[in-house]
Image (cartoon, rainbow, N blue to C red; front, side):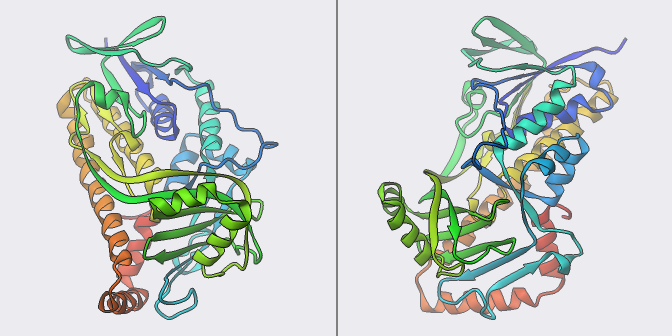
Length: 400
């Protein structure tokens, strides 16, 4: 008789819930006892609430993954921002200059380039799916200890002890799982903070994702479903502090100027927040009985909106590896099994992280020669044919 394995997923964020849904619907789900635990209360989306501050750019490939588990239909029927164009330019030029990068969905034969979705909506949609499965969901349950017990790990929460053949750490940048098993990280602080808020714009956003590279860091403006824009402004830490304490009028003026008024005057129309930016990579993704996914394993600069999509890809690959192991009567927590996931994802995530870091530094360099080379490079990229096509398909999550 085939053995049943216990898998505990720590963290009910988007990445943790995605891997739970994939495993619950996998071909060998009957051989898994799946539990998701989270220290927070269960997230609930309500269409009568204002658009939440935390949103993610969801690539086409990630949307397809969510569709495969039955979560995307609820997202689309609720509210989702769509962008079918992107405009990227350097502060030394303007959005319509020949050196500005321009992408249109029609050029790549896709209906749109991506979606802007509230994190809480993604969580709610995935939880709706898991409610109709055998996955046990435990909220408001902070972990007090993670103990190695022979070939298993014991997850200790307030009133229970859960023994697991595999613990999946999907518990974010300050991962309790990662720290409990002494997996170290390499950190590269950017010396920047990301200021986030919602704004109304004098001109319509045209379902376009706008990004302007400034010496202090990039400004991204993302279209929301209600006509507003969500702003992610990566800038010097002291500027971010000023943005947090400024009046709405002052912040609107700061952001209007930073955007070169490409959408006219911007007016603050939502809460605001800021968080420090750091590139982070776990030295290991796996140990026997342990696997890290999403922000627990890596963090990248938000300038290309790839953070959530890298987490979706982690979840998809780990689920594939586990299902393949079960098909071969292997224990999903064995290190040789988990190393297949690590080999598939660690290099790709590192490549994206270093590319984002390099791009951020390139545009932050205040040099006439470098600025001229950037402009030449952007013009060449605009006309590079296959290279441009491949780069965009990777960003869309539909090609490698």
